[in-house]
Image (tube, rainbow, N blue to C red; front, side):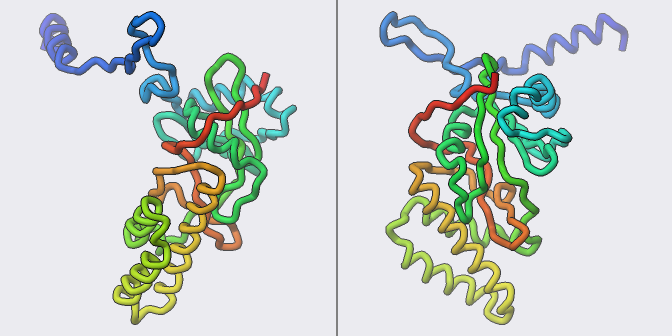
Length: 246
C-alpha cells in the first residue's frame, strides 16, 4: 500500500469513528447551551497512570506538609477517572471524580470497621484533581474472590431493600447451606463476608453515602482478615467543602 492509499484508508476509518462530545447543559438564566462541569463528564475526568504520578511529583511538597508521606509512586490499579498509587506505608488515589472525593471526605478519620480508612482528602490547587489518602490493604481471600458472584446478588438486594435484612439474611443462609452444606469452612467464610458487607453498607448509610460499585475488585482485607469495601466511585452523598493542597 503506497502513502496516498494509506491516507485515504485512514480518513475513511476516522470518519466512521464517533466523536466523543462533552455532555451539554442549558443555563437557567440565559438559556445558553454550555458544557457540563468536569465531574459530570465521564470523558473529561480521565486520569492515566502517568498523570497520577506527575500530579504527585508536582504537589509532593504541599502534600507532605499535609501529612502524606511519599516514599515511592507505584501505580497499583484504577480506572478512567482515577488511579490508586502505593506511596509506601499507605495508598493515595488521584482522581477527578468529585463525588468520590466528597464521599471519602465524609468518612475521613472515622475508622469504620468494614469500609477503608480515609486519612484525608485534598484538592490540588486549580487542577480539579483530588488526592484521597487511604490505608494500605491486602488482596481479598482467593476463594471469596473467585466466588464473589455468590455474595454480590445478596449485597445488591440488601442495598436496595435494607428493611428486608432479616428475611434476606435467612434466604442467603439457606442458599449457602444448599451450596456448601458439605463444606463447613467454605460456608462459614462466605457467610462471614456476607455479614461484613452488610455492615459496610450500613456504615456508609449512617454517613449519608450510597455506593453502587461493589464488585470484587473493590473489596480487600486487612491483615487481621477483616473484609473492607474500598473505592467510593459512583457514590452519592451531600456536597461538602474539601481543603486544597497548595
